[in-house]
Length: 205
Ligand code: SF4
Image 1 (cartoon, rainbow, N blue to C red):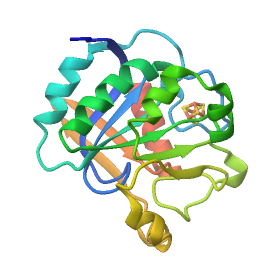
Image 2: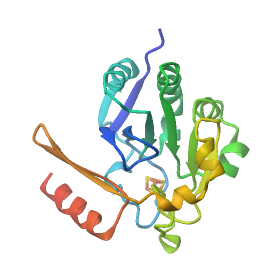
Image 3: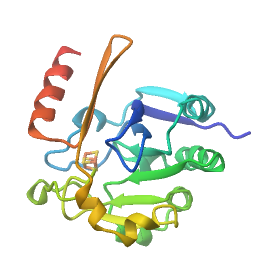
Image 4: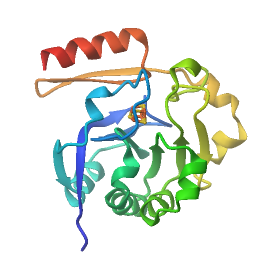
């Protein structure tokens, strides 16, 4: 079986703050874009962080109880699209949904027609595309940082969200703060308070 590796910045095994329902969230390391106000600056450098085979991530995710899906964020997931597509395909075969955040616009993705990107999109249920734009920062939609970012329903899995856009607005943005095995992780909507906390934590290593 094909078992490519992924370069991972961080994982959170159960969060309500990165998409619909309870989700496993996976942040990849490395992004070529430089959005002003990016909330994950430590994940931008394209450098080896935690290199893990897809099979190990599959085992970890499938033993996580009561999640409805997995969210890929970063960093830029499309830089590792080939391995993420393999991971996503296996997870979907087990009934999990896939949500993907990318800094590239949908127009750019379709125009580029990169086969690896297309393979990942073929395994994606819910796509949020476009760079974070601090000038259009908004808390109007759950999980999404700025008004320019677009939502694409690439399967019927989240049709109820599509048919009821008000739910994007009525779902509150939230932050998860977890202390586990001596490690504190903070994820969720990047409020100023969250940014201050993340900065303090990264200074302490
Ligand atoms: S695309 Fe995402 S990770 Fe990359 S710089 Fe922009 S906000 Fe940061």
